Amino acid sequence: MEKANQFTITRTLDAPRDLVFKAWTEPQHLASWWGPAGMGLRVVNFDLQPGGIFHYAMVAQNGAEMFGRMAYHEITPPERLVWVNSFADADGNVAQSAYFPNNEFPLEILNTLTLTEEGGKTTLRLTGSPLNASAEQAAFYVSMFPSMEKGFGGTFDKLVGYLESIKK
Image 1 (tube, rainbow, N blue to C red):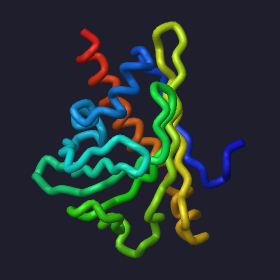
Image 2: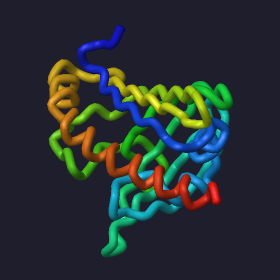
Image 3: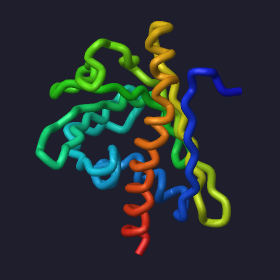
C-alpha cells in the first residue's frame, strides 16, 4: 500500500536486470546518466555498501555545480536498492537545496528501487518518501510530484540512451 506522500515512478527498460543494476551501482555508469537532462555528473566519492555514501556533483552547462548524496541502507543485487537521497554541500554533508532556500523541501528522501525482469526487459520502480519532514515539507513534497515526474522522466531517458550505448 502506497503512502499519500510517496512518489512512485515506473519505467520498463529494454535491458537485462543485471545490466540495469550495474548502471545504478557502479560509479562509471552513474556518471554517464544520473541527474537531470542537460546536466553532467561528477563522482566525488562512491562507497556502495550499507552505510556508504555516493557523493556527486551535478554540473550545469555553464559549469555551475550542485551537490547531492545517496546514503545507502540496503543493497540486494540485482533486485533492490534502498538509500536516503539529499542535497549536499561540497564536503558531502546533507544541505538545503539552493532551489528551496526557505527549507520547504524535505532534507532527506527515503528511496527504494526495485528491478524485475521479464523477457529480457527490466521494470524499474522507484518510490520516495520524505524522512523526518514537517507536515509543511511533506505537503510541499507532494506538490512537487508533477515536476518530479518530469525530472525523473528526463533522467530515465538518459538511462535508456546509456543502456542502448553499452548493450552493443
